[in-house]
Image 1 (cartoon, rainbow, N blue to C red):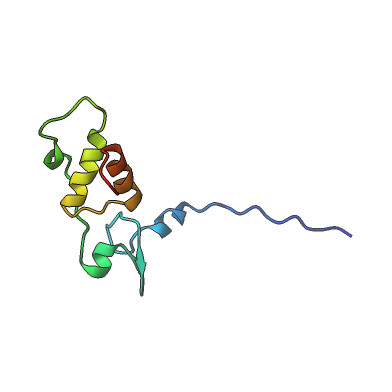
Image 2 (image 1 turned 90 degrees about the horizontal axis):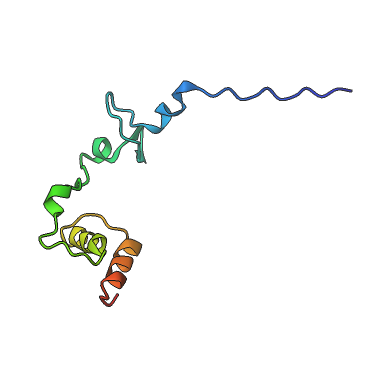
Length: 98
């Protein structure tokens, strides 16, 4: 009695394309699938605010190594999405009560 070995799965070149928005020319990963997988922009017509580094230049950079925390707090104050854990760490670093 012999057993047939399973044939190795061949990787397709299109595996990466399956993760992208189905709209023509859009290279964003899809996040919403109602009829077709689409990015949030093409599904809902909204685009998240993009982070502009030049807009968040600190007026008085310090040498204490905590400018990263100040940038996170500035992002949060200006309405950008900031993860709660990042916000908590930034507040702890600057000794602000959480």
